[in-house]
Length: 548
Image (tube, rainbow, N blue to C red):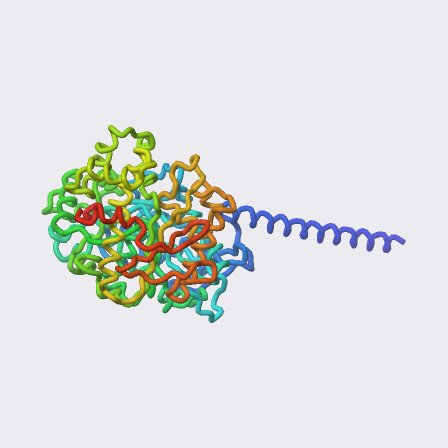
């Protein structure tokens, strides 16, 4: 009898222990799911995906059946070789966790917008050469299209560390691989010291662009491990990210590393001249009390002091004759990219965010104030054109527009639309690979609709990420409808070099005779030469690249 009782008690104890183990496993699984979704670091499991890169093994995590790897080093710590071309990362032993964003580059702009999400991991470091990968499959032999994203923020700031750029939805939607990249910015990436420092610093004005070249080389050498096709890479970016794409199109070191390009509200017609860039360098050296004869001292200045000295300065790629041997789209399009298919696009009301976000009084202008505000905010774009004459022409074109409507229409057409027209003209005359053009007309309902279709609105739509971009798009059915249209078009283009798919009217390649343009709205349509009358108002004003 006693033996039977003991046996029963042992059995009960074993069952209780098993029950505890099951509960613990369920709790761990739930914790893993919650912490992953919130972006916290978490404990990996035996089922975590592991990939082998040229520098070592990395361990990621799974999000909605998509393998995610974040903070992967593609270059060495840039503090060790400031203002120099980047070097590959140091190899590591064992398996490195890649489950959270890596450090972002030193910043000289603030991320305080109530419209655009701020970077998620605020850690800043010169050890910032890292990238993130989302993929439906690992080492499975499939050759998926690869979409490499370059973030906006001009050349001065911002980061890839934003959930808005999360690649899960694009991966699931189109069976593609998505890569986002951090790189050197502002003076850390574009301070030109070549004229004062000699051969050692000859490419310093384009160090940040050379970072992107190194990232693309990483993709070339590693992306097959992540189920991607190294010979079918599309680079895409918005605002400064689009300008970076345009610059890469003229860089010999980037030749052959990408096969398609999408630029969203971002053009780079010219680089800075070495002379102009040298003036900026002299200004920064003066702030740091460093003489040109002791230029090497700048490599030892603490990061925070350098950031402070860079405030108020402008940085863009430099046409240095080496890394960037010529202007990307002036006087013509670089022949390096003649055979690369391209999409260019803008939003209908670029400057409601670009300018209006920093001065809300511009949404309440009077007719008396309007000419002065146009001169104040668009002097370099209208050149010798009279603001009063411009206003008179716009009032005839759009009799129902308010003064603020005309202000944002003028600044958008003269600044953002004009630069895209310049690129399109020289690219189309090149008569190479096809170019497709879009304009986003869908108006966001956020902020009571006053922004209409502003700069950056196409970003959450292209990534099919209106949940992460809710403060930009809202989360309604209309936003999702336009997100479906744009993301599907971009995926089709990444696969074939042609954005046409079953959900759009036939999208013809661009030509200078009819200028056909896809208008993205709830009912997409093709319009020939949209803003044609506005284009003619500004066609005699020479375009000057901001920052150059």
